[in-house]
Length: 132
Image 1 (spheres, one colour):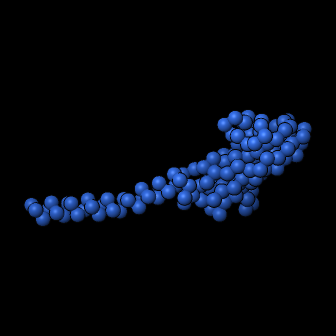
Image 2 (cartoon, rainbow, N blue to C red):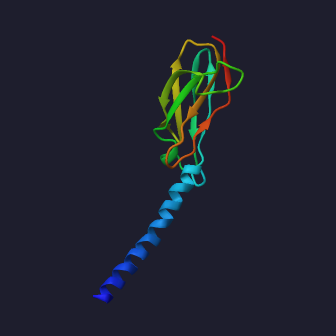
Image 3 (cartoon, rainbow, N blue to C red):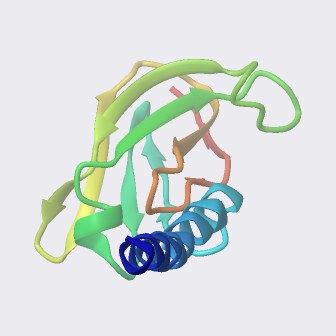
């Protein structure tokens, strides 16, 4: 009986030790420590907006990523305050992952944003001006 108790205790300690690295990895992801780099670009022409989502692991961090287009209302980007204009999902075109909102009919200052995921970093593009 004592041998069985010791074996059970040892198994629990071992299982706890094996589980700990998983918790450490999740904690690192919450801080953004081991997330995969991701970037988003934006271009505009006469109210049309398009760009790319780029990553060293594109099938994980670019394919199917939702891109949100914001109209910047102040001097600086502020997604919690700026107007959400449109969104699109990045899809593969050759070896690139592209997004496109089509013609929004809007003018002003705009930027694109991809949110962070469990595996990938988020990013915000530079601000561009569209004159319609």
